[in-house]
Image (cartoon, rainbow, N blue to C red; front, side):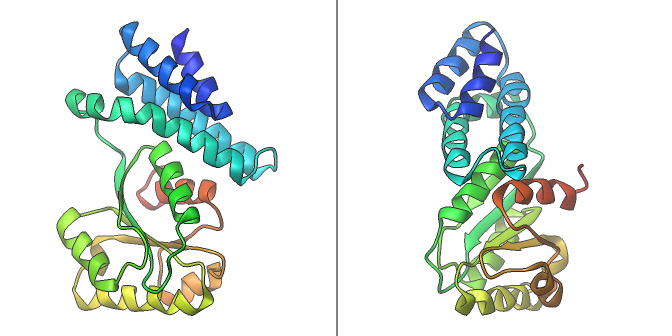
Length: 211
């Protein structure tokens, strides 16, 4: 069955096979929604589970996420046509002064794999741009990444900017990155912290009231 092939292709990180199996599933008459929620997302959940118990590592997560992206590139316009609702929207970016994006990109792929719509603002994102996106895009979550200890201040500045703009209570704030800890998240008033991409996707679901 092509749906099983979609699952296996994403799980093993085989992007060409994911493309082929997705197209085959569609030709069999399966909906884009069924392929996404019964093929792609369960596979990424399993990738995350294996990562957390030490059976997969970051490079394997990346290639699985790329296989997932190959499938969703085909599915995304069809999902729009079918009127399939995403479970939520996440605006993400690496904070001002920081140009690192590998971790952010992996978190974005895992969150997309969990059913979120992603608006990626890129790197070196100013507090003002985060505020503008909250006002314009109405996301459920803002996810901020910082790899440098020196840029953690930008997380505080962004949270302060959200409060000053009167939109802090309209969005959940998640933070992560090498220098970030749960203690830091508590001190700066973030709603969530995740140490890695897999747990970030689960934390995001929890923040919007899903298990």
